[in-house]
Amino acid sequence: MGRTLGLYGLAALGEIGGCFAVWAWARNGASAWWLPVGAAALAAFAWILTRSDADFAGRAFAAYGGIYIVASLAWLGLVEGMVPNGRDLGGAALCLAGAGLMLWRG
Image 1 (cartoon, one colour):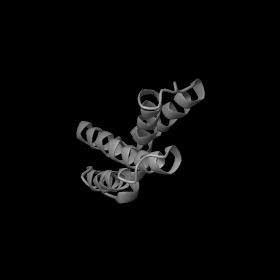
Image 2 (cartoon, helix red, strand yellow):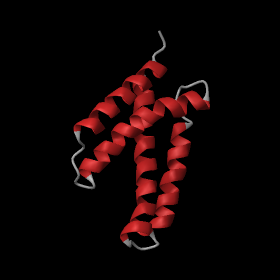
Image 3 (cartoon, rainbow, N blue to C red):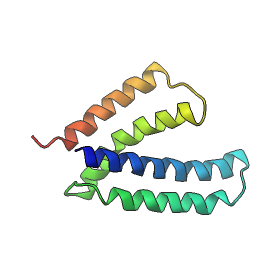
Image 4 (spheres, rainbow, N blue to C red):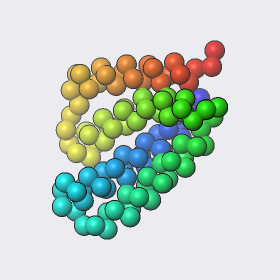
């Protein structure tokens, strides 16, 4: 489980970083040089996700979703300077509980 969570954390950095690169270019006027960096980050995200221990892609993607939501809120606070509100944190907790339930092999 620890290995999978670590991989999901790395995958989240790749996905969020890649998407943010496109956001920075399209919405914030950043240089087009952000686009190949974003594409590389998104490719890394996809590859890293395949390294998880899940037996099926759909289950890996679904469980990863909870980690992605938490990582996105961390990005919101650390990179964008906006503190997540109570609804953000409550929703993230619910999603993380769902991801844990999917990953649990009792």
